[in-house]
View (cartoon, rainbow, N blue to C red):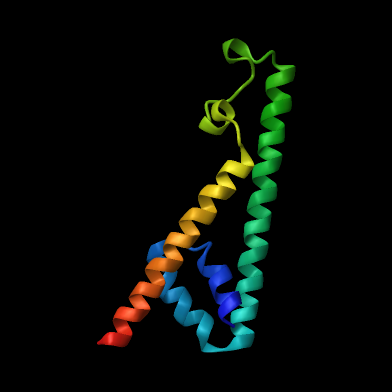
Length: 111
């Protein structure tokens, strides 16, 4: 249960961690369905983002690209990394969220 819950919590904004945590721990089957539904949403978002990026690339190539050489303004295009860079950032944010959540749990147990 904890693995599924933390899998979801890693992808949830910090202000939603508490309500999502309670929702996930109510019942294992419910948690599993919430987890799978959220995972599907994230996969759809990633696919849409990839398609948008592909369209942007092919559109900028066929359209000549203008003065920027067809590159977008996004920092990862200038600094390299792209998707991998974003994933590293997401992993770092997820680790920070998890640590903050553990801290909150520990503080709650001390009271």
